[in-house]
Image 1 (tube, rainbow, N blue to C red):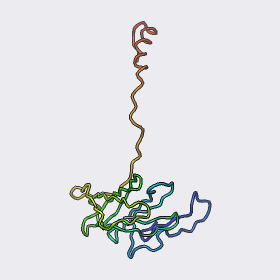
Image 2: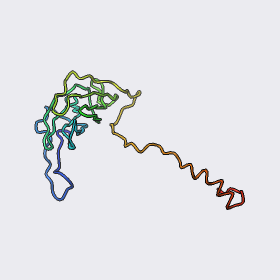
Image 3: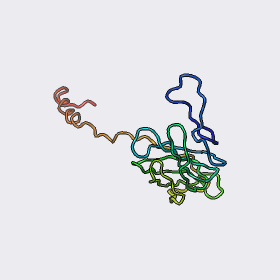
Image 4: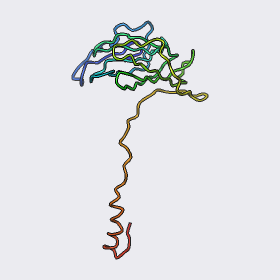
Length: 178
């Protein structure tokens, strides 16, 4: 992808030369995608929605995605959006954005908005954008990414702890060797 559109390079693993195709066939004037996320709203196993942080238009845009092309389904004004991640619960998406303020070109804030319009629904322009964090003086945020979550903490096996005194007594005449 470049900042004037989002491109798709075929499907599956590459097996030869591929010609990129535009995902957004009619982008808004001055379109400048600095972050995007494909998600599945509702049921299904393939992405049906695309969210884009469009810096040139000071907006987070929602697109209906059919697997090949994307059609604009509304936008919300956000000053200087530069990064974007999405979390989905059923048909509702929580969109997290790094953004500036006013004409600031640095991402000094992390904001969030919620889209409950579902797949194919219109993202209302009056959607509330909530400020979550502000960078300190002379600082900025440089993107957002989800970190993988690992398995829960495990408790050490207790039988081995109990067996050590018994083994030490039997094998070494009561002395413990660690």
